[in-house]
Amino acid sequence: MILSKKNGSEKRSVEAIRCIREWIVNNYFKEGELLSEVTLAEELKMSRTPIREAITYLCNEGLLDTIPGRGAVVARMSQQDIEEILDLREVLEPLAAASAINRIPDKEIENQMKLWIQAKVDAEKGIEISAENFAKWDTQLHGMLRDYCTNERLREFLNILNIQTGMFVIRSWGTKAFITETINQHIEILKGLRDRDYNFLKRSLVNHIRSNMTYHLGR
Image (cartoon, rainbow, N blue to C red; front, side, top):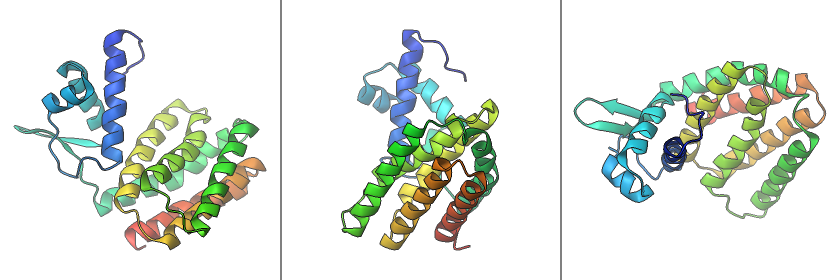
């Protein structure tokens, strides 16, 4: 489903997609939980039509599954799902980075670097970083590689993979060692971007994704 026009109905559909997606990724709904169109419409103060369109869209993103006779439920993220997502990211993110590395503005890289360095300082001080904030920052950083990539189909595919990644990052949020290691990995990715050094950037991306495999899959 393409939501490119800007009439009132489609604006409501886009807003419904954004809100429901955020609730799913942030684990406000549990895996396997049945979503009620009526309840969602009441919560978002919308008719059921944009809710229904949003559910269809989110099914295509892999966040929801449709069960005949019941409706839409929050997708369960299996170990195989996580493995497939990370395997694809290991191949596709360096490909996106190759075309994005010289197109991302210095200011955006600088802002991201400041954010992750501050996160490192906070973590070292023992200041708690919420899973929601961490997932948001992760999405922003990897989103730069996606958004400045010149391959439109690759951008769309990575968008879905990054959204699905957010689901299991929050659901398996855990140890201080993982948090510290992941922060350092993001800083390394940003160094590669800042220096416009593709080989360094690719190594940093692959190291980061493989580290996620170790943490989430024990590989």
